[in-house]
Length: 377
Image (cartoon, rainbow, N blue to C red; front, top):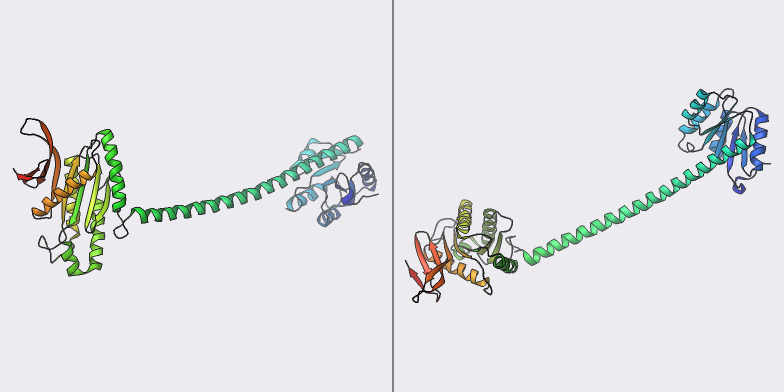
């Protein structure tokens, strides 16, 4: 008597054979083992039974009229819904080629007639065990796939959040460290960067150069062209200075108003002069009209250059002060140029060496003595 599939201990088996005796024998054997058994007399009945209620295993006779077992198996394996149901072929044939053909069309095993009860039970048990393990593996893989999808989704969300945070941090950093008008570094970042480079240069005893740039006659430019044009002029000049300063470690910053500063780590006096000349030419190439300037009819720069090898406990403000003095001298000399203040060793009246700041402007030299007086050589 067939058991209800829901109460079967071991699973549901469909036996397909056109011989009633074979159906009776196999169903009796398997029912006693606790399997729920269903029967079909031909291939078409088998396909219909599988579609109605898929079994866990199919015992399929090869030699049947109209549709043999090979064709039935091929059709089953072509159906995505039922392709995973294991098929054990039944036949009186014991030829190796027949077994190979059965495997090629999707058969999992082979039982020959006459039946050996122990063999039938063992092969059925093995295939159902394999089928159960494969099903569990598919379910596990499905769960893992779902978990991976959730993890990937979570990772994507975290990446998006981190990206948003990074963007927010970048914007915050710009607000803190970047001048909103010119988009170069602001005075706050300049002071911080110069302090760090001053300390590093002192440790490694490397030259540190500083260039202070001032737009000539900028107040009259604003008065003539208006503040909107003035802001645009500042942006263009800042960009020109930025492109003139090429090394990653060099810094361009807005010092205040129409003044810009350039920090040049590990750069001696001659290197700083080359940068200043490059800056001057870049700004000149802009050809920004300035009809009210007494220097040129376009925007020009005056620059003060200072170079020091820092020594403790001196402060970076001394470098800025030297650059400012050089800038002042550049303005006195007619603007649209640069003067440089570099440390030189001089003998005082007692014969001892002291350090003074030498100001070089084009073809004239000016010496700042330690007390700050200016003399022309």
